[in-house]
Image (cartoon, rainbow, N blue to C red):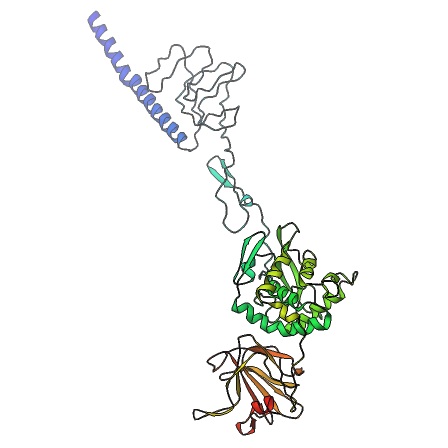
Length: 506
């Protein structure tokens, strides 16, 4: 009987183990696996929730699992974490946290937390989980042209959401007009950028070599400068040297058509002006850029005349502002250039550059007085000052040559042989750039192959006025002026006159 009782008791224990204890073990194992999976998800940045705390009694047996759960009796259980968060006596331990926060520095760290089955005696509320915000991180600037400091973006983590602060607004620069985009050369620029063949050796020495483009420019304005200098008591050599520096030998935007401003004179001329960017000198050798309005002229002659007026009339509040460069005050051109330095131009080496140009290109020759062109008995003057007759009027090699060819250097000024009205000023496939002037007696003169002309149809020109410059445009094999004279404005071959007889025969 006793054996039977014992057998029944053992069978009951085994049956209860199969029915109750084993399922509980399986449930515990599933909870451990679930907890580990939740912890892994926490490390990878996904949100987790607190483990539900399980109350245990002193009599409940806890299975041995990989979660290292500890039984506690009447004590507050502190979670064992890999971040070793320090406990304080006044704080309630937080369990189930997916990340540790270092409260003293505000930095964010990641915490590995295992399942805690603990019993708290002082609180019954489940601890909340707070996800800290990461400090702002500088991002790669937006490459739209704005300043980098205005294009940094802030990155903020809020749970699983990434927010980016919008970049600070940047006001785009006002676009410049096409004319404003051109930088007007200034005497303060390196001399080699203004005058071909020049080189700045050191602060006290500038070397100049003659250059054909500069010589061509001098020929264009030389005689006009001589004439205007004589009329106004100014040094033509200084005028020409200034024009070379201020206009880059006529190549600057300001000096070319339709502006023709050779001296960088600011303001408006007869209501016309153009706005350009130029460089100025503080007076101590430091350069800065400034936007200014400059005067516009119809041609170089007007620019030279206006320059002379400014030099002799001065400023509104000081009529003798430039008196120190007049011939009556400056005994030499060196005295004149020294006076202009810091007064006309802010360049502290202005006189050194002007003097070098005057010496290199022998500009003093234009300071000498000369008589005007001799008018022959027929009322004509030669249209060039420096030339060689290269081809006569009439038949040559079986073909008829309509005029007289005068070989000359590129840019040599062309003077109106006789006063009259401009009837043609245009380009022709054979004549190139040409001008036709009808005289009071009905005769008409034609000036062909010009590099450029300075008059327009309808202009009345005086005898000796510059109407253009020698070139080789159209059907031409070299730099020269083709000069024709017709008995009327038709310019028909039957009406042509030999120009040589009008110019040289008495």
